[in-house]
Amino acid sequence: MKLLTLNFLTCAVKTCKSSPAAFPLHPRDATLQVVETELNLAFLKNMLPRLMWDELRVVADEVCGFLLSFPPPCFPCFPFPPTRSDLVVGGEAGAAATAEGEEEVEEVPSQTAQDLHRVLLETTVHEGKLVCGNCGHEYKVMEGVPNFLLPGHLV
Amino acid sequence: MSRPEDILPPDLFYNDSESRKYTTSSRIQRIQNDMTHRALSLLDLHSPSLILDVGCGSGLSGEILSNTEEEGTPGGPHVWIGFDISSSMLGVALEKEVEGDLFLADAGQGVPFRPGTFDAAISISAIQWLCNAETSEDSPLGRLSRFFGGLYASLRRGGRAVCQFYPKNDEQKKMVSQAAIKAGFGAGLLEDDEGTKNAKTYLVLTVGGGDLDGDITGVVRGMDGVDVMARPGAVRGAKRGQEAKGSKVWILKKKEQMERKGKVVKANSKYTGRKRRVQF
Image 1: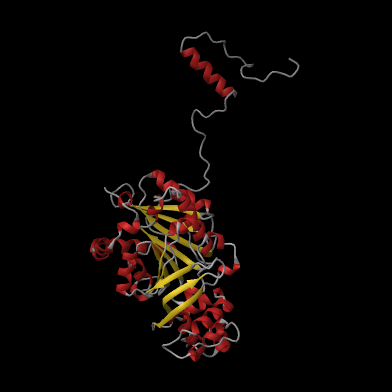
Image 2: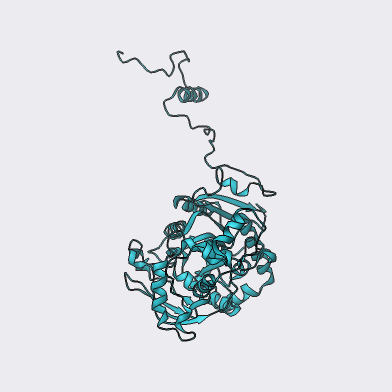
């Protein structure tokens, strides 16, 4: 399961619906896996305003401790939420050029975009569990598939 | 025709052998492929989006979502998150190494994502399973309302969802679409090959107006071969025999009825069916 998904996932238990602590779910005893995929700049731009940065950081920090396959510096520490122009090499100048209707330039993803892609779409939780900060319910993750089936009394 | 919903609950029906059969059958693959493309054309996506696949099964529809624009997926490649209740189906999906994230979850228990997560949602041949409840403490209506309520919240404003399903009868069709409307969706039913054995029903749902002008029928505007049969909110003429009891029309009708039965009935005059004055 990608870290991107973890940035949207909340606890499924009925009583947690109204609690702010039910998001994000905290990964415990997680083993991570990096699955290389092609960078999709348009998708990153689309998702950017929807991401919750503080929560992403919390999850990334928690997960960092279990990182075995690659060293922690791969996790960029975002000093501020990047904007859409940060994702492209040339940044604002490039954006201005397209706005003025000059020739369509092939946009080149910047280092920030590559880091983001690595964190959000290539880093996946392979095994472990997700724990709700409110009710403490544990969702087991096996082979990258979390089990969200709930017993009847929690629905 | 036998309906698998009537035989066993989905997590038991789609066991290892049934899942494999389902995934390797070229006939099912072709049908699922067609339906996914139809659903995508209704979703009308233009850029790579985050999509929820409800009842993703072995990822037959998901594979199409991850295709690029050149391979025939409009706006692709999309990133998708899939749900299914059958672990065997998910096992097949894992073997195929599909690109989307998979969840073992029951759609009838809700959609555990924060509000405004998805650009769109798709569901191919799944939500008819929600019309069956397996335990006495659960009910089809409860399952449908939890599902649509969760789905409504997790879609962004202006997002769309297309659910293809096999309704057992008109009653079930109505139950599902009413549940969606209750959750706040703008809903419409699109039927392909209506009245034949190959009939396919698509429930098209919108959240907020988005860029739609007018009602739900705006989704199919400009599509070939789609007839709009009924518009939401269209005023239907009052049905025969629905005159208010005690009204003049009703009294005249009753008198005529009695006359036909051979009873003695007073002649009609200008006073028939009039209200008496208060002084009387």
